Length: 122
Image 1 (tube, one colour):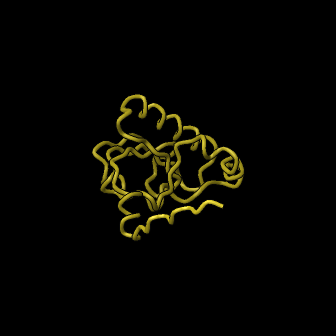
Image 2 (cartoon, rainbow, N blue to C red; image 1 turned 90 degrees about the vertical axis):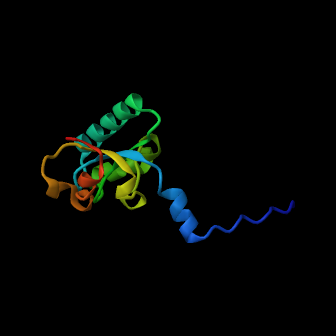
Image 3 (tube, rainbow, N blue to C red; image 1 turned 180 degrees about the horizontal axis):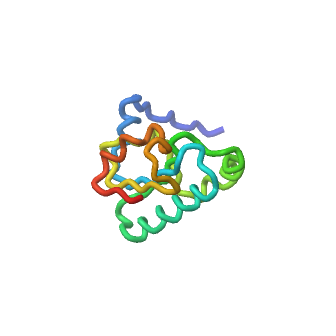
């Protein structure tokens, strides 16, 4: 058996820097996202990715999804531009899109991100 070199040690602060720190666009669903919210968010993310390909666009579900959407994502999440809420920082957000709701309360913990972006689309 060939000896595999040990993986380099990366400090937690370095991992934080690697994972966070890219400017991006974010499209938010409402809390407990259903299929129409997810579909609208993915469509807007794809449109923004075509419009501005140099800037990644992520779909974020601030407080998760309903059970049926969760089952769908268990099999198909890898096909969608989804990113976890806790993996992004407000200061890295260029534009924020909000789909399927007009009430700030419905986007839960992501509400402060509305002040962070240079552009907001509802």
